[in-house]
Image 1 (cartoon, rainbow, N blue to C red):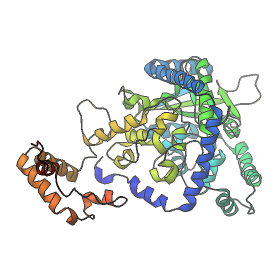
Image 2: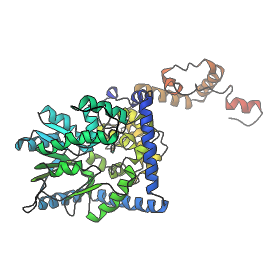
Image 3: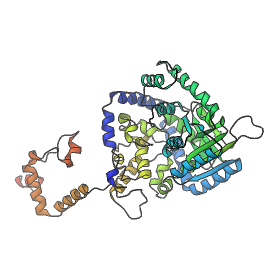
Length: 477
């Protein structure tokens, strides 16, 4: 994709920094999450041991990913779960639409699913006359406002209770204005409970899929995910192809480090294990269960040994909570389904490093994300790799949009720089001009504006190093 269509994170971030309420909301929320996570890991050695184990599990799963996916399909089929494969989001959306239409479904409830956000599933279904209601409280709040999630775990974290109170009083029928959290939750619950029983189908995400047993694991705190998957007669689960693990015993350590890293909880309120539709003697559960496995560029990422580490992510959000950039601008500034540090490496690989050139540069490379990542994804190293890929079309590279972030201005600047350094006389003449006319260099030059808008103008020294050595009678070139 050409660089002209690039989405500018820098402008969106600058706008977010001018919103004091947004910054206050994030600061309060992030401080709380960081403190809760620290309290869950009092012993650094225990934490590192659990990180090492979790990293090993995810790495082993990825090494044998093709075989595990085939095993998962076989195990699911044995359990009565029908598996569907989607190479693109469009294919995934069409698969789900056809499943719903074949059963006459016009209303569905959704548990939390970032993959469905990636597919823009809600908007697609609504275009085809199917009502899709988010049942996760945070997702329901932002759906009322027509927004996208600003955090992968807590989608409405950018709002405070006053903002939510005003929203509910305006958007929910017969709702009164109150800032009491319990009353606000009860309002949402009243709407959602009725929708659960009216729904023809339920859609959920998948945190882990176990190849050995064909089990779909869902982590949640509200019970809405369980209602979405068990009350309607049809359950459709969607997942990225990287979510598979080999054995059920491998889920326990991943679950332990996921909940502690995400929300600072030792365990979540609910942990659902779904192994098939309702049995002949069972009184509840869906009559049909379908699993849609989405690629959408993941197999391309998988093909690169370094970038493959991106797929280890268990979607805990810890990297966001500790990122000095994300905690100040929020998730919407990224204009992407996956914000924060993990989004900075995943989104460009899915959409192209050229079109998301600003995103891969929206990092200080401080390394906080890598320090807290429970599966030790080297996010800063991958960011540096993607920055190079954005401007260099290396042979054999599988990165989407490689080389398309390169600009004529940047090319000319580097060529001029190389020409000066390769010619001693030209270099000396340039150094002399820079030292003598240093105070006349305008800070508003396009090449300098990105620097001078938040820093002092770079000012060359009064004399070059060679001139100083010469004046001191020291050896010089």
